[in-house]
Length: 263
Image 1 (cartoon, one colour):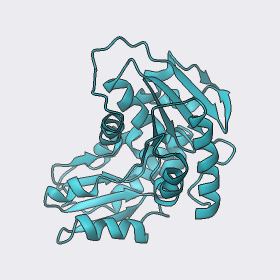
Image 2: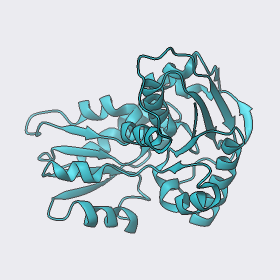
Image 3: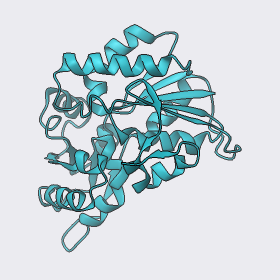
């Protein structure tokens, strides 16, 4: 079994680690785009062109499924990628976990990139799945970039700024960018304190990994031998995991199979 994942940077690590835990025997293809990173500030048309190139590089390795491990790329490029690759290659997008968060009854906060916060896409998800629930959209300035570079000081500062914008009564925080799942423990710690409600954090990685397996008719086998290989593509070129990936547990889980490229 072979599963590919794509993103501009290491935001795909959360979903990759989730797949690895469910199927340690699966071969993984990680297709990143360091030449075009970050994708967030790009126009939808430019982002889609780059996403198509990254997806084609992954598809050349003949995976059985392709996970788009990026919320922004899912918003702008998923229809094009599915038109291009399906039905031969199932393409699974990443959507913020707003629906399960709203099911808790709220109040809910959605931490997302500034470009996604307040966007028609996110407002549409809130309208579809969280009608009647109090939802606060929290822009996380610089957090994805800080996580990408494993900049500890910048990560702490960005989390503190977002925490200050999060109402104390919020019970569930949706991590609306895949990079944020890599620092979930630090986000949770920043949102503890007097006057704050007990908190749940909801990411998308586990659900996306499970959906990829369902799409190819495979079940989880967490006890399988860890025999799966990891192939890393950097803007189409065979390479290694970026060095900052090893700052995170999810990157270290893959490090033995895919040596890191140090800065």
